[in-house]
Length: 493
Ligand SMILES: [Zn+2]
Image (cartoon, rainbow, N blue to C red; front, side):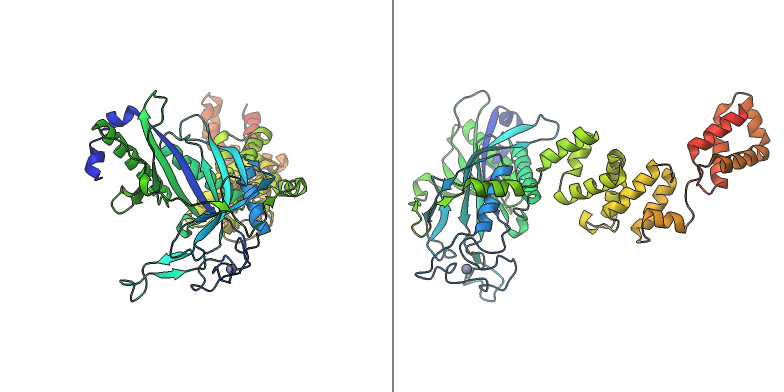
């Protein structure tokens, strides 16, 4: 199918149809070791060094389930509001692939670890929506075929089995998404929450998050689902969106020209920007699933569930609600500040140290993130600790520092010159709020500016700003502006 077919689907044509999308997301769990053996899962080791008889599938080697992998799968399930099954079972999914030495994958089939969940997504400018999660199941990963990088790569494909046996969960959604924007928002939400609960790094470049989509279209208002095609290889956020938009356009054009969508597997080719037919339904795999005879059923006792639940961190959505409810943050600010675990931890510590969460939010989102961005740094690399930033915010709140001096001191804190209080004391920058000292300064300014004083008394009250400015100048910016204003008004009025 060439792109000219898609070009034949005009935006008006596409607008008459409703896309129906379900996703299958593979997530690599961040365990230290593989799912059925003790080999490390570290990325970037020399090829075929993180291997043993189990993950090389030597005859007679037996798998032993990794407890940490189960706990991470359960944590992911809880974050996705799934019901965790007290008993699930592993099954063999049989197929041949050069980088799959066993000749089968150990997966879960009719008894997955959890089912029936949901996650909330938000597409810009639209109501929040829930996307249903059909199931979460555990499985092991295959190795990797390496097609290039060798002198004889023209003629040979190499196999690296370091990845063989790496733990994965597969998250299967209901066909609940109605466009590429929603699929994008879904994958974003999955990535955010799984990173947050430290179940996966979700690094797409390293293949820790991979995505396939089931796509169909139907006329708007139609009940019956159209025939779906499975689109594979959506391995970046950008490709996911581009591939779905292409596929939706392709199906609409096909139907509009009197054709019929075939149930088939298609591969997204990022170079061509097209999806290409891989195999039709007639050639679909029959994996001949059967219960894995080398593993006992996975039983998760109430006690174990309680332990895992007890160790769960607060989910980002709950933390966001708490920031809004308890601290009066704006919805948008709370969203930004809970976008990653690291940022929300940083903000929370700053807010607690400052005693003024709203002001702390402004400092973290504005001054701090701005400065870090300018330096190309992450929040974890901040030269200012949350406690020090909190102290600065609190000094301003208490009136010991003016806002202007606060900004100057913050710049020095970024430069590693110490805490706000230390800089303030070293440089003698404390705000002057003592009315005795301020009155003397005000008297001097009144005496030195008779013309402006006269103007003020004649009714031109805005001239007071000039006089305040003179006092600020005399105090090297340390006078408390509000107090100066009051004293001036008193003396002039
Ligand atoms: Zn191994």
